[in-house]
Length: 155
Image 1 (cartoon, rainbow, N blue to C red):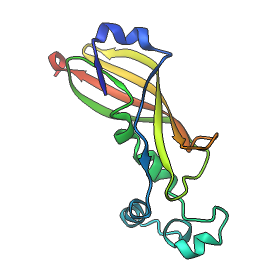
Image 2 (tube, rainbow, N blue to C red):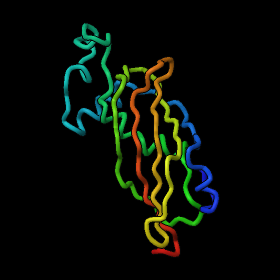
Image 3 (tube, rainbow, N blue to C red):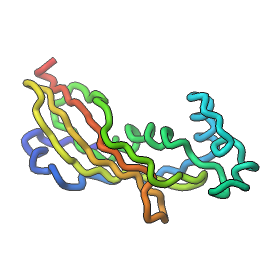
Image 4 (cartoon, helix red, strand yellow):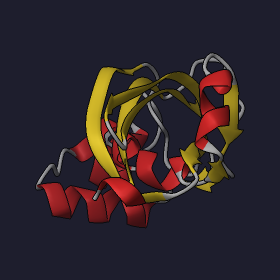
């Protein structure tokens, strides 16, 4: 995450603000997510059955990919200098466009879509996030994520 003077952030609206490193999605991560969410569909956890399925291997849950946005966004977004905390404020327009096959690598590409002062010392950032799959033309997902930044003097 790049820390930027708050006066400079408005000028970044509409621009790409970062790309994360690639992250490999392995079977252990998929299986742990299946256990945590109790979503144990064969396409996620049974490599033998999945090998005969439509993708030739297991795939990550769409919500697993979505749940990685805080991690991926930590290295592909901007935040205002002097913030006390950042609060996940939700997501808009989440779309799962392409399955993430086990062993694939993903990364996020973030564009700052909006940055608005909601109340004194509280700023809402809207980021358009694309999670790319290495070697694929169609991304895994796109989403507009919302982050509320509370400045130190506003606590």
